[in-house]
Length: 188
Image (tube, helix red, strand yellow):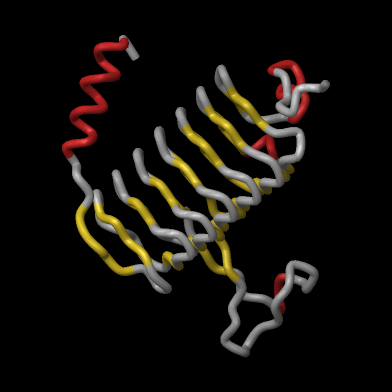
């Protein structure tokens, strides 16, 4: 039975700008513009994910099946972040206001594509089916519930949910101190 993840030698042929150690990428994931993508250590990208454009992935990241990252204006996922299944991140958006045509197949002079970088700070975790729009930062420790819509930046260590998201409650930031102590004991 063949391995369902690319070997390190096969990853070199995809053409990433760089990638670290212990990178597990499904053979069923798709990459467009891999030369604009940087991948850290201990990263797993599952089946049927699409990554396109300028994407920077830190270390200890998991991107679950069927997630899509459209990074025309950039997407950054810092260490210990993750996407549950079917998350979609759009760093660019067409103008649906009625004054422009809409489609990547229409010449640029007839469209108005806008956007900005999406940043997931360390320890941010995103629930299944969530959509994140352009030019937002999910600060450290943010957790977003399933099926949410993120249209603005979110404050650190908050738990958010809804369409659009709203703060549900604060997350226990003491978890980070306990985790860092544990990792220090392990020598990581």
